[in-house]
Length: 166
Image (cartoon, rainbow, N blue to C red; front, side, top):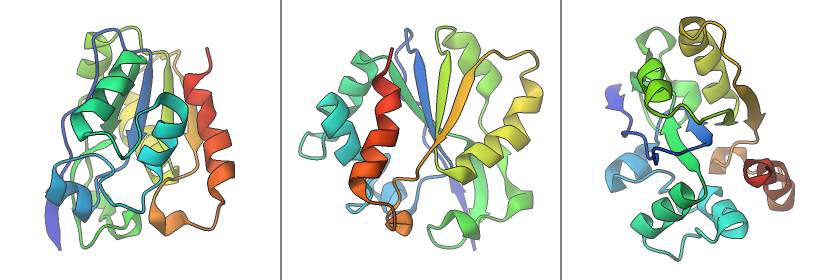
């Protein structure tokens, strides 16, 4: 069991949308990149929605997200976990990222989308109580993780299209 830490947020000052994962998996941590596992559907979906597909260099993908007003981060700052699965996160080891600071620095964020149920559950448990009176629109989207491959890609893409809706 090892202690793992997430990445800093990727966000332009004028971000309007925040996509939250739970904690990067081993492939992402090794690569130093969000959603680096080649079977994770995140960048394929971003390619179809925003032209930020996996064929682009990582920095260009991030730039396209930011240009579209989309920020990317994880709910968990650090935790203990063996392997990559969210189910392996030791619940009492979770420390959330500083969302009070994030939202103060990015006041235009009005919509928060969770990449799967674990991100949503941890946000509601560890973050939301510290954000009284929040007016954020929050919605869970189907996980893009290869561990959740039972849902067809077309269904995931359709669900994720809300991130580009005005």
